[in-house]
Amino acid sequence: MSPLDSKGPPASQAPRVGTLSSPPILKKGEDGEGSLQVHQDASMKIEGAKVFSVYGKGGIGKSTTSSNLSAAFSMLGKRVLQIGCDPKHDSTFTLTGHLQPTVIDILKEVDFHPEELRPEDFVTEGFNGVMCVEAGGPPAGTGCGGYVVGQTVKLLKQHHLLEDTDVVLFDVLGDVVCGGFAAPLQHADRAVIVTANDFDSIYAMNRIIAAVQAKSKNYNVRLAGCVANRSETTEEVDRYCEKVGFRKIAHMPAVDAIRRSRLKKKTLFEMPDDEDIVRCRAEYVRLAETLWNGTEPLAPAPLPDREIFELLGFD
Image (cartoon, rainbow, N blue to C red; front, side, top):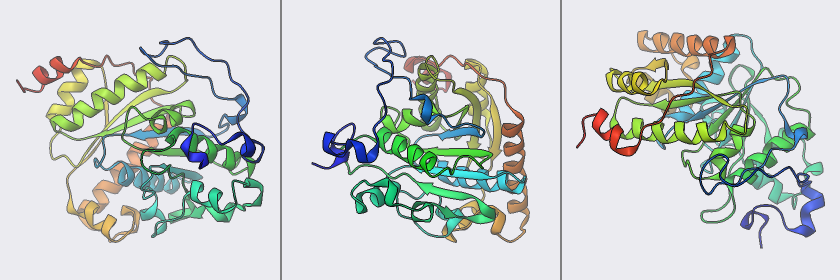
């Protein structure tokens, strides 16, 4: 059986991977009915860097937002590490220009002997020095994405790759019931949600807020706000934020330049200086400055399903 077919590696391989020591278990339901959470091992804490996790429904533009945000942080002179947490492993390809191998695939190649790996085996330097890692994920229907994220952070710490980093950015998969969704929350200082000015995106944001709020009872992560992406206007996003006590911290309009940059496998900061591109770059830099300077922790109250339908005009 593959190590990915269970919550952790088989006992025979445990010394190789270095499983976490037994952390204290919280009582059932402390962060939601039916949930059982544990505190992370103190040795896995990311120290010295500001850590952000980017969330949103599938296809909303999380990876494009994450990569351009990482590029913007680098333009501010910050040392940035972006960690893609989706099995598609396409989080960083606009930074590197290609799909890079995942941590979990590389570990499998060395029979889960991390000591045989060098940093260049799983870390790629992208645009303007942004360091890029793709955690990857287990095969469909097997294993847990949270285990993969945990092993990625552990590997980075073993190779001392987090010590000279100012910003760590997790680009997280969209499934709010997966361990791969929850695992980055153990490390993040602030969570950012990418949404759009439509019902489905705001409905997903509402669910993500509920999940992050539940986890924040046990973890230090707090919500920073949302990015209205691919949206000409933001009146529905603004209405929702006002209702629940949330905040829009950036607005990326629906411009073709962003689509073109992804097709060219480049960030906006590598594209020609067209008016739309310059405007979007400035918004990403402003967002990076906002996050770096610190945001007030938000505690929005997510709406029950019926109320969000009524708020956004759907009966």
